[in-house]
Amino acid sequence: MSENAGDYEIKILYKGHLVRSIKFGVDADGKITDNGIATNNKLGNNRVLVPVQVLGDADGQWDRAAWKTDAFYGNPLTGFTPSP
Image 1: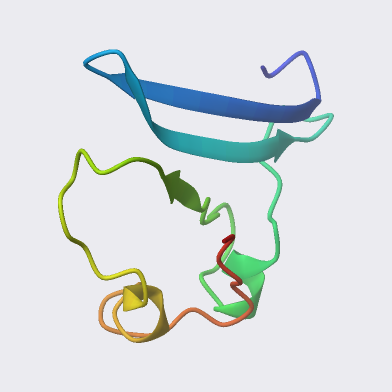
Image 2: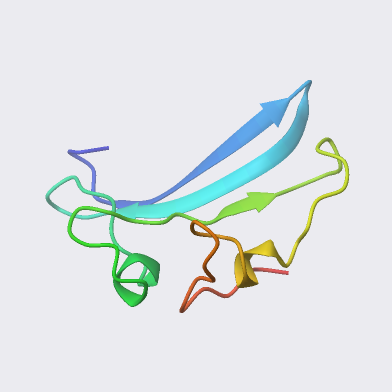
């Protein structure tokens, strides 16, 4: 990836079923690009937060709204919009 800038998607399978999808970009220097979430939350240099889409029901019940209050050490994420 460090030599091929662009958009990437990683899909995770568990027992033959798609359970996660992670999308991110890589810049010309081979670094994962900041989607704005790290900057908006003042995480400092060389840090990014990459949203992960949870798919299916393999994880059982989970709180889809936790990002509003507990996403980052008990703090909400600024500038994050979950996908439907």
